[in-house]
Structures are given as structure tokens and as C-alpha cells.
Image 1 (cartoon, rainbow, N blue to C red):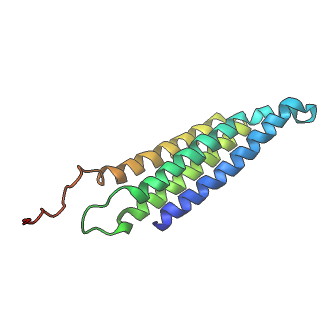
Image 2 (cartoon, rainbow, N blue to C red; image 1 turned 180 degrees about the vertical axis):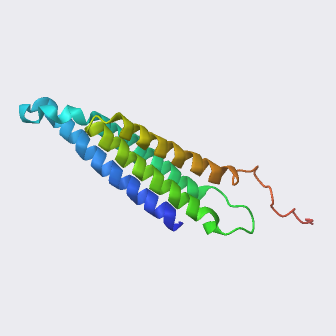
Length: 143
């Protein structure tokens, strides 16, 4: 597994842990009057679980699993993938910060960073998608 994929999967698992903890706090807040303000964390919970965990896991595993063109190194697009990981995590952090402080412009900047990360990943993956068997050696005579 490429190092970039490894770090993206680890970051995705950290987002899962944080999102689940916030979700549990919100659930406890429905029953306990002392945690009544926990429902204000709904936007942060959604951001961490959907973008931070699910999207990042897909991108990390996708970079690892998409086939490479014959004769090209695995690390061919690692720099672009690392930039996509940084943009995605910065976007999640900005969107969560903007949601907590009701700062719409920070949330919008975070969403723009997340979109840029996904578009960068699509640029990487587009070149690696090809029909099955393309570039495979022709079968030899049997018999």
C-alpha cells in the first residue's frame, strides 16, 4: 500500500472515531438535560462522518487499488495524492470550524478545498482507468 494511502486511511479512521464520539454525545444529549447543547454539533458530526471518514477512505483506497499503466511506478502521482489528502483534511477542519462558529465564509472555503481534493483525485484516477486487458501480452499458441 502506498504511504499516501496508508495515511489517508489512518486519517479516515481518526475522523470516524471523532465523529462517533460526537454522535454519542449528541445521542446522550437527547436524554440528559446537562448536554442539551450537544445537538448544535450536528453539522460537525455530519462533516466528520461523511467527508472525513467516508470520502477520505474511498480516496485512500482508490489511490491504492486503481491499476497503474504498465511500466509506470506506483509513486508516479503520490505528490498529487498527498496534496489531495492535505486539501481534504484542511477542508474538513475548516468546514467544522466554520460550522461551530457560524462563519459561513470559512465553511465555504472548507467546501472549496474538499472539492479541489476530489477533483485532483479524479485527475489522478482518470489516467489509470482503462479497459480490462489493455496492455496485456497476447496469448501464445497452445498446443
